[in-house]
Image 1 (spheres, rainbow, N blue to C red):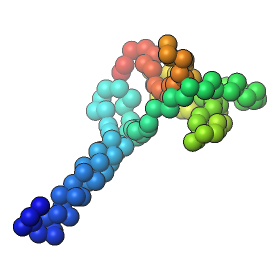
Image 2: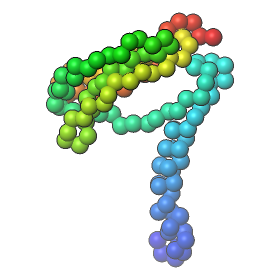
Image 3: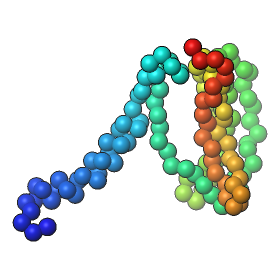
Image 4: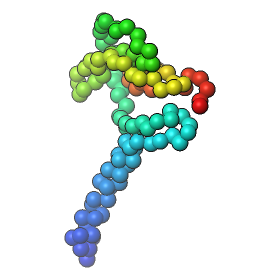
Length: 128
């Protein structure tokens, strides 16, 4: 803009970047539940939805370790990396009280596309 200083132009140009960075920092920070919910600090990770027109490959046949008390097994699953399918190994996830783990999995939408549903915590009883 005419008559605008170089500093003002830089500030106006950096504004969308600063806003995006601020949102990312706040969205990925740790949040306490103050006596409700999980009762401990958790990290929120913002990810993009993974949608593809290609049918995911069948899951790999793997040895699942013996059950561990207080843990849930997240089976391995396929994900996309550009044009390639990439296998994510299974792992144990520690269970917080009164929650169970709903594993990551693929679902087919009515339009025929496939969407990766991320694993998530599901309430499993009365909250403390």
